[in-house]
Amino acid sequence: MPDLSDDHHELIRDLSGIVCDYPYGDPEPLLTTLAEDAARTLHRSGTPQGRRELTGYTLLLHATCWYVAARIFSQSLFASYSRALDGVRATLSPASCTCPDGTHPAAPGPEEGVVLGVYMLTETGRAAYAEDYEFEGAELAAFDCEAFLTGLAEQAANRIREARQEIFGHVDLSHLDARFARGDGALDIVAMQEAIRRTWLNNTGPVALWSARRWLSGQVREEDRIGLFLCMWMGIAQTYEGLPPSYARTLAEALATIDLDASCEHPRHPWSTADANVGSRYRAVVHLYAPDSQPETPVPAELSDRELWECPVQYAELARRALEDLRGWRTMRGGDDEDWAV
Ligand SMILES: [Zn+2]
Ligand SMILES: [Zn+2]
Image (cartoon, rainbow, N blue to C red; front, side, top):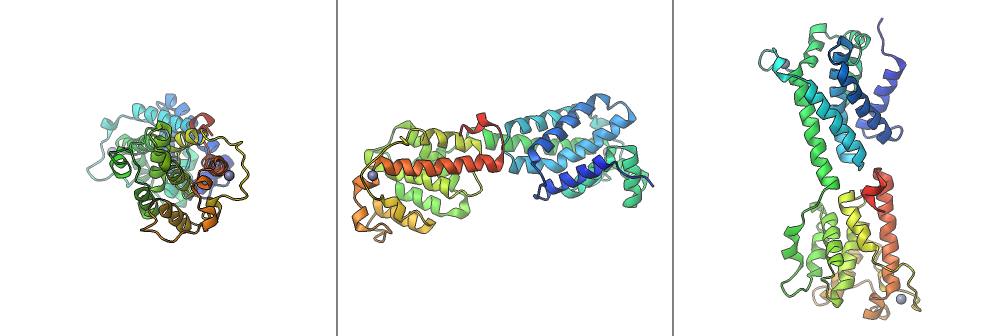
């Protein structure tokens, strides 16, 4: 009875863990190897074995691309996937398709695609698959159609391209300028707080990044500085799943303007009484800028002095916490040092 090699059984197990979002090991090196192996086999696509691999790897790249796009912030892995998928598309000739209209198989889902992809890599695997899953040889051959495979490769390549732009490219936030900055140069800190509060709109990242850019531009009135900084801080602290390098680079740059070695005589600073939860942070900042609309604040009167709010040591405390968060994102999402800059 035909069976897969041990390596291929292991590959199915590892890739299945990844596409089910429960990877056994570090997914980044495994997926890099997959993309490199795919690219390496392209030159032998004229041979029967090379042809099987072309189908198998196209299925595997398609099945795993969602995970790369959504879970791993690694520029070099994105580059490996793009290279492999470009190679696949250049190798395939969709015009060779002779399938009757509407007979292409449906694109397999990630879990199904991983299993099918690995079995399709070898002749033995195909025989085993036909037996295990009660397929006829001709039914399996439908997955070899080059028009079908081109569709999969293009879908995967588009997904990777879009995610790459989002994760590493420039984030356009110009629509926020009119909402957060008034004509006279004053910032609408309350509007920024309202935006952060609408968590269902995923505003935390954009507010943090907008704040960081404004901070770095220097166009900040003295009285807006602490409010703007806290909006950035909250945007970081309240993005638990982590922001990509397209955000983190600029956030790190803004945090680097803070003197982490500042010292003072104050026993305590106001933010320490507010930072325990999202609601009290909101009340503290809005009270600071619009006490009439937000009379309640978690900050006691003896800590409400503006000088305490603006103490360089409080900025240093905030910056240290935020930098820790940024480093946590990097550990969680993987990727290359030069993309993160933290
Ligand atoms: Zn076809
Ligand atoms: Zn102080």
